[in-house]
Length: 357
Image (cartoon, rainbow, N blue to C red):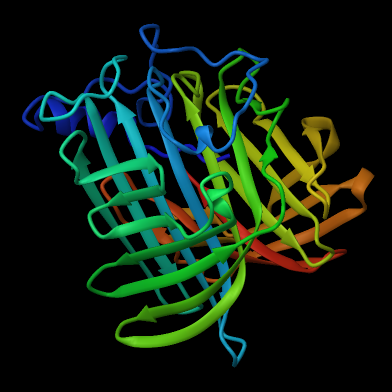
């Protein structure tokens, strides 16, 4: 599950930063009531390729990719790219400066010793950022996720690129695997009170291309993961942040796990087990344990950068460790995000995001 902390910030950008920030409800305002926007309810029928595009009426959505990469010498890297669409009003998109949509981009690269992150902002309606379907293209400034495939299956072959002063990457992502609906047929519940998002993934991407860090290029390849989510109020006011895991197992299986921390009470746990053919099984709190192990001092706070993960019914008993414990996204709203290694009953790699610490 990928929920980014951009709603509060984008609202402030649109209204002017001279105003005092409102009291937050839930992490970064994502628990604020959104009764004017379209609710997320069970039973939605997903449609591809249409659902790769924007969804009017919902408050927040994103296109999010991570890649676990290696070069020919075995050096490990991570690349992350996210485009967020935040609606300030529950009205359809319009062209021009009357548009009520704000776009935000995040990009990062990580090695064992370096982590660089950057962000971009844009107002909708003026061509600086957006998502089109024919052909599929998601962009903000010169950061792009663009299809190289046919219109009926645009995500079978895409180019992903981002550039900042300290890093850049250009990756080709291809997949023959199916889209995966998370939760209950794409209805991904986030709390006992029923907060939810619509959520699907493409966890079967294979990436290849170039990553450049501080002027040094690397030819890389490895697995990649796409998440697509949209919602209107995905959190409750009691929820303070989350720990999200996307795992590529060497067996060919994939796992998404999600631990939503709360001010009061035990964390809300959910996840999806994805077999090598793309068949899914919903995971509940009783099916798994996610236990923080070692921590590191990161940006003045203690972060759990090693985890024990157990799913007994799948004979999964692994330890997860960060490639770079200092993978801190030092952006307007900061969080931790970076590649991880797996050891134990299963080998593999993946990505970890931790917010609200």
